[in-house]
Image 1 (cartoon, helix red, strand yellow):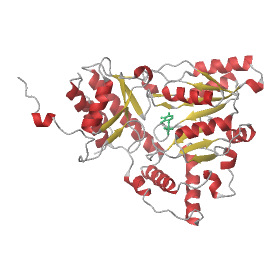
Image 2 (cartoon, protein in one colour):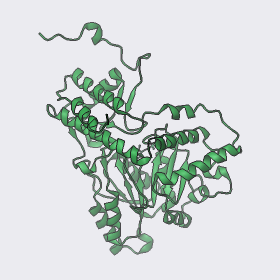
Image 3 (tube, protein in one colour):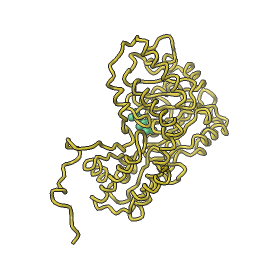
Length: 416
Ligand SMILES: *Cc1c(COP(=O)(O)O)cnc(C)c1O
C-alpha cells in the first residue's frame, strides 16, 4: 500500500481562505504580477493638476513612450482598458460604414471584429485557425480582391491584427503581413493590437511599417489595468484628421493638441497611473532596455515549452501553437486532451495560489493558459510551474517531469 496524505493535510484550507502565507502567482494573462516599485507609485499623494512637476512627468513620459513602439511619431494615452484603445482606434482610422479587415486567429481578434460591427463598420475577417496565427497569404488575397472589386471610397481602410493572440498563444508575423499588404499594392493602414505583446515580443513600427500600435498597462507593462496607449505613424495621424466619425473623448486630433495638458488626457490626468507608468519604464530601462526584457521573456517561454514537453512524456499535454516559430513569448496555451482543464485551473488557484487562464472558444475545458509575462524571475516561474505540477499530481492527472526540463532550460542560460 502506498502511503497517502495524512487526513489533516488532505483537508488543508483553500488558498483563497485568507490569511495564507506568501504571495499568489498570477499566471493568468492579465492582469499580471505587479512589482513593488509600481505598486508604491499608487501610494503617492496627488499634486495640483497645474503643478509644473506634473507637466515635467508628462513630458518625460512622452519623450520615452514612442520608443516603446520603435518608433511612434506620436502617442495617445487613454485612461481606459485595452477595449478603450480598440474603440478609439476604430473611431480615428475609419468612419462607420467603412470597410476594415480584421485578421482573426482567436477570441481577442474575434471580439475586436465584433466591436467593429457593433460600431457600424463593415468588417471582413480571415479564416480562423486556433493553432496558427493569421495567414499573411489570406490577408494578401483579400486585399488583392478588394483592389480589383472596389473603387476607392469602398476600399478596405485598415488591416487589424493581434500580435499575440492571448487566447491561443500564437504570435503573428508582422513583417510577413506588411509584405503581403505591399505585395497587394494596397494602401490600407496597418493596425496592430500589441496589448499582450508589448514588452514581451519585439515589435517595430519603423521596420514593419505599422501605422497604429495599441497597448494596455496590465500585461507586459506590469501595471494594474486602466491605461491604454496608441502609438501612431504620420499616416495614421493624417487619417484621423480626415475621417468623418463623430468623436470627442476618443479623438486623436484633440489628444494630440499640445495647447493644454488636460487635452492629452481628455480630462483630469490619471496621476497615480502616470507615476506607475514612469516606474514601469524605469524598471525596463534598469533591466537593460526592451531588448533585455524581450530576451528574458523568450527564455521563460522556452522554459515553459520545455516543461510541457516533459509533462507530455507521460500524458496528453500539448502546446496549442503548432509552429515553434509562431509561439508568443507572453503566454502559452496548453491542451489537456481528455483531462478536465478547468479542474486543474481550480485546484491550481484555490489550493496552491497559482492562477492560470482558461481555454477559450473550442478549447474551453480542454486547455489552460500559462502567462510568462511582465514581472517574473526564474524562481517565480519555477514556483508557478511547480504549483501546476502539484495540482496535476493532486488530481491524479498523468504527467512526466516538467520541472526538470524547465530547470535545465533556464540553467543553460544563467551565468556562474
Ligand atoms: C488582454 C487583451 C485585450 C483586452 O484588454 P483589456 O485591457 O481587458 O480591454 C485585447 N487584446 C489582447 C491581445 C489582449 O491580450
